[in-house]
Length: 160
Image (tube, rainbow, N blue to C red):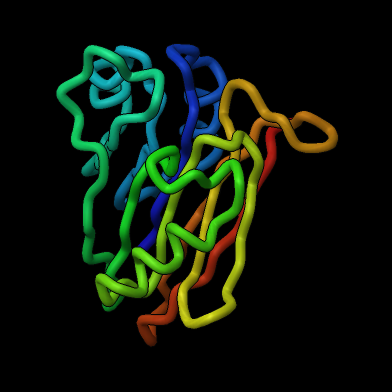
């Protein structure tokens, strides 16, 4: 199983279209918020199931603010992250995920890619497709692959 994880498109879809061209075999796409009204366009663009949560810039959206998903054998909490103050650190979100019995938490909001496997919870931020803030400012996304034995592997990828 291959899962495409993106965040913070902010209504700009050119890079997302490029990513979908690069990653044609995707079984699930997760968008971690700040679609800014682009949820219908994105749902028409992808050819797989799509899970989207609301971000802090999705003011008039009916999107849920977070979801709990089952991905293979894993339980994942997906959220934009601003309600957990991820710009100040990930520990509040990690504690929430642990308290809910999650295996992983996926979030956006900071526009910086991040992957951490410590303290029993995988913490993943794919960065921003449209407005990257990390050194080098390359748009980024993540791929989660579940191998034949059911183990998850994560890859953060960049557009040039």
